[in-house]
Length: 374
Ligand code: ATP
Image (cartoon, rainbow, N blue to C red):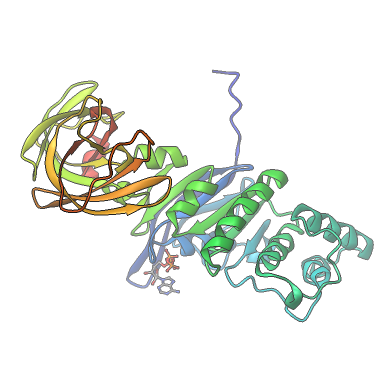
């Protein structure tokens, strides 16, 4: 409706391509990043996410397409003329300088008055909860504090867009999880647009407003964490973002809300929800994604799409839940069950088990990307 507030985009990546000789690193990528958004580029090593970030920063030039920041074409602008800040994985702080001098550096280069520098440095340190630490040497700080100094140094120039290249990648898991929360909080507080690169899907799900899932130089899906997790549109997204049971089959019958799918290995025809927005003709090859938390053991009261007879291969107790590796008809399955405390005995390895899933918890994705546009 007209009352909808649509935030304008601050960063436009439009049909961008990057070739290194014969190697096609980024293919026809278009992304519009909204002002104040936390956008993550997520994908495995070599998918092109760093190259895309480097083009936004100005360290690489697109072979084709356009990059605009705040409506201005940036393709020809060198990094220092772009309204951006950057945080690298290695932080690139000056270890022998004080925290204050590290932050002041970028402002001195811009020939700012000394009093303004002092004020802006103090303000940036306040934003990252390091107020008053101007005189401390970088080598006297903890890993987490250094991380925040690097963030403050990137924010002190008041960039329109902050680019972060796996800034938490070198940290141990516990510190990493803690800093994820901090970074998210700081981003919400300062309201600066963040473009964040990671290969860690859990990190992307926790922190982002939207995620661009990349593979082979392309963005396969761009959406909220909930969308890419609960409604993946490609086999890659279904399998890269979160654990899943991925079965193959083909369309055996279509309908507006529900369709019939013939599963290859289980040799069964089942009903599943039709994918939103497009009809897949009969015979289309498809993948069926069922999340481990949606795989239920028989005995549960739910209405199941089918019941599979198999056996337990492995059981791992994870505290709040239990993870089962299952096997049926030569295929592996994963189930995660919340410990209900209702006294249901744990299943043991080797034990026969029947399991299934509710029809509405299965997500169909075409195996061939060409079928997506049907
Ligand atoms: P990683 O997480 O390992 O950094 P990535 O997803 O960030 O991976 P990129 O660094 O963007 O991937 O690289 C994408 C592809 O482009 C890779 O195959 C890489 O080898 C290639 N590539 C990147 N930079 C160059 C370059 N300067 N010259 C030639 N090939 C390059």
